[in-house]
Length: 362
Ligand SMILES: NC(=O)c1ccc[n+]([C@@H]2O[C@H](COP(=O)([O-])OP(=O)(O)OC[C@H]3O[C@@H](n4cnc5c(N)ncnc54)[C@H](O)[C@@H]3O)[C@@H](O)[C@H]2O)c1
Picture 1: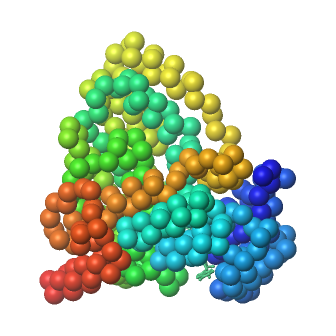
Picture 2: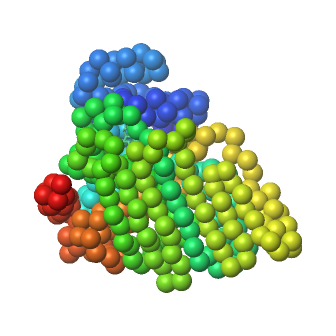
């Protein structure tokens, strides 16, 4: 297969980034169809990107033989059912983050991909940034020594209007707030760079918005020999959204963003600089790079660089954070199918009880 036919389901905010990325591939990818329950939105999107087929029915995309790859740019609660339908229809599926709203859904998606022998990927575009690759190389080579402390913070602001979009701000449809939506990228980076923690303690709150879900979270993550502090926000009124990662090792440190690796030992510092130079500067944005990788993974019959398994790992840590906040207790990983937050129903029930308790306290 030298070229792939592409369909996009969901023509809202992020979908244009997908369409532009596919268009940049020239003859390697052909945008064939777009679907959105909002018919006018699908039509306008098709017109803007010169897509021949548009519909308010997802099936019009799924039933076409000339479409092999489908991008899902949908509300979070629709990722699992529509991904599973697309996989069953024989499509390779790239889902926007988060993979799903519960691990039960994520596992059903992964099983459907395995059964259909199709690729299932999730968008975590930061992994494609050169500085993230550099940080990973520094850690893999042990150049800052053994990490003992990390900080990841996503101090972002979202206007009240952001939550007027009806699927956002609700446990049943967004699956959570700042943690699962915005800071999912930071959670993924923590796991990508440092591995999965063993324990989590988290608190969530709703500070500035009239929403069910959290706009603030503070958590401590514990590995065997290191700890991290994590915070997520859509209520931080800073001049500009701020994302920060810090990793302290026995012999040096890495800070992002901006990227500033450092060691006080001159020789190590030089080794770090040398390692960084071996990673070429990425000339396209991470989001575009990931979509291109997904197309190439289909053409080359290989796994995408960010597979659903990676999306599941981030979701597992997110689930542990919510379970800890709901139960006001430390949560051990892994989250098993017996864990109270594993299923969508279990998570929603815990969220309901937590919200009721919070309301009583006020
Ligand atoms: N990777 C990133 O940095 C990034 C940035 C923004 C959003 N996102 C993700 O992209 C996804 C979509 O977010 P958004 O901001 O574009 O949301 P949005 O609300 O702007 O768009 C969602 C679209 O889906 C459509 N839709 C709803 N139900 C549908 C159905 N059954 N079939 C077809 N279309 C349907 C809606 O009409 C809407 O046009 C989310 O998962 C979000 O987290 C990722």
